[in-house]
Image: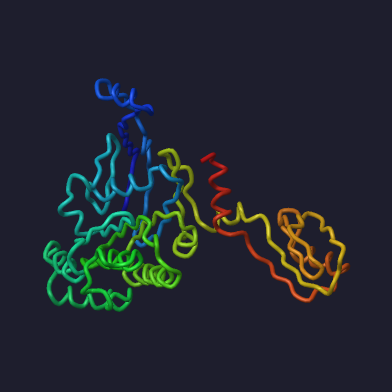
Length: 325
C-alpha cells in the first residue's frame, strides 16, 4: 500500500555567525550547508497497519510525512502509495489520505469549526447525507459539540487538535498521517483520541502512520516501529521485540515491618531504603522476581510488594542509544 524506495531529500540551509560584522558579511556573501533530511529511506507499510514512526528532533520524520502526503518532492527515489506518486498525482491522491500536523492547521483560523467543515465538504465534494452522518459520528466520538460554532482561534490547544483530527477524516480517507496528534491534550482527551484511532483502524482498516515523541501513544497504538535517525531508517520491527531486548530490569517496591538496616540483594541495586519501605532495581537478565522475593523474604517480614516494568520512554531510549542518536 505504501512503498518508499531509496528516497533522498536535502535542504540548503543558510549559515551566519553571530554579531553585526557577520550580518553585514552575509548581505554580500552568504554561506550554506546541506542538511540530508532523508538519506536513502526505504520501507513498506501494508493496508490496515498502525506504524509508529519515531526518532529524535531533526531525524526526518516530518519530512517523510510531507513526501508521502505530496507536499515535498524528493531529489531521488520512488514513492508509490495506493498506485499514486503523491507529488505527481496530488489532486487524485489527496482524496484518499488525511493529514494532521500538530504544529499546523488545515482549518480556517477566524471562522467557526463547523464552517471549516462545510468548506472541506465542498473541496472534497462529499455528498450531503454522507457528510452529515460522518460529521455526527466524529462530533459524538471526539466530543466536538460544545465548540463547533466557535472560531478556531478561540479554542484551547486540546480542542483544536480534536477538531483537526475530525477535519482530516470528513472525506473518509484510507490512510491517516498523524504528526504529533496528541500534543497539548489532557489525559482524558489523549485516551479518547487513542481509543478513536484504534476503533477507526479496527472498523475501517484505515492505515495509520503516527509520528510522535509521546512514547505512551506508541505503546498504546502501534505494533510496529520504524526508527529514523540522521535521515536513515535504523530499525524496523515490532514493539514487542524492542521490549524484549531492552526491558531488562524490574523495579521492586517493598513494604515490611520495621527493619533499620538495609538488606543487600544480589543482582539488584538498592535505590532507596527506609525503616518500612525499600525500592530495588532488579537485573532480570541475571535473576528473577521470584528469586529476589525468596531472598528478601528470608530477612524481611514483607507486608506488600509491587513489581513494575521500566517506563516505555526508557525502553525506547535504549533503542536510541544502540544506534547512537
